[in-house]
Amino acid sequence: AGEAILLDGKAFAATIRTRVADHVSRLAADHGIVPGLAVVLVGEDPASQVYVRMKGKQTREAGMASFEHRLDATVSQADLLDLVRQLNVDPAVHGILVQLPLPEQVDTGAVLDAIDPAKDVDGFHVSNVGRLGAGQKAMVPCTPLGCLMLLRDHLGSLSGLDAVVLGRSNIVGKPMAQLLLRESCTVTIAHSRTRDLAEVTRRADILVAAVGRPGMVTGDMLKPGATVIDVGINRITEGDATRLVGDCDFASCREVAGAITPVPGGVGPMTIACLLANTITACCRANGLAEPE
Ligand code: NDP
Image 1 (cartoon, rainbow, N blue to C red):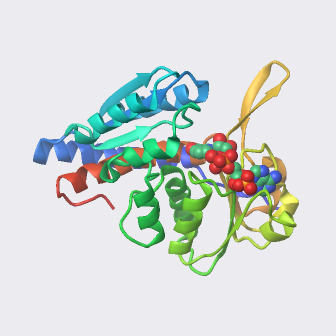
Image 2: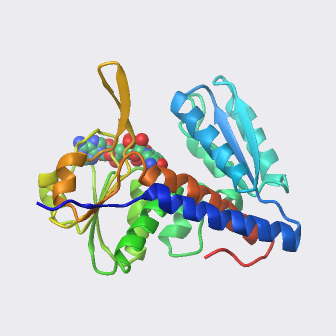
């Protein structure tokens, strides 16, 4: 058995961040514009706190303005909507991200749909979801966009390939399937009701796993040589230590796949890099300037 090529999302993300920082410098020098990203965090969820901190840090490192809004877990829907509406009309804010998950008393869909679609850098607003599906210019969700960039970098054209997306969430699975369809893959979306999952996944030239179950995809479920994108971020405890693992059983998948993303260091870093890139895109569109590639 061979050993799969590792798709190094950490290194790729660093090159994207450099490109973003260059673009930010040019926007400042040529137009006096500083792109701004507002991140709204509700409550104390530990993983969300880590993500928000990393997003703020990388936003500032790229030379952009970062606005962080932290709200108590008991915030009312009305107060949260008020904040979103303020950010919508704030000219210094080009991108708005409401960190998910939101507490139970809040209607997540209503909050996401209150964001100005032009500032919706997560691409979760129903109009961006619809535009992506209809093949129109849209804000594309960051995690699937990062996965697509890794795939295109490794495979070049994806046209005609069999792609299986494991998971059908609005955040990852569904937009990933749309992007792969846009690339002319033959797309299958599998989920918890799928019958004979291994038979489905073994047809995949491209397998994107976004389930949230540590190690559920094993090597015997893969077509030899497949390109495997592991979106899962699962914290597992071993004795006193905890570590992050993906949805793929790395050891066995690595023996069968042609290429695979590690966890951590694969999809995760690409997600934040794409968020910065989306913020530049939103800023350029807002100012009628040429967009980055
Ligand atoms: P969700 O929980 O929203 O969706 C999980 C999906 O997996 C569902 O569609 C579910 O099916 C499906 N599923 C669950 N169990 C099985 C099973 N046994 N067989 C087949 N399908 C199954 O998760 P998310 O999409 O939000 O996230 C998925 C993973 O990706 C998580 O580990 C998350 O932490 C990670 N993630 C990583 C990001 C990154 O930046 N790298 C960003 C976002 C998420 P059904 O719909 O039928 O219930």
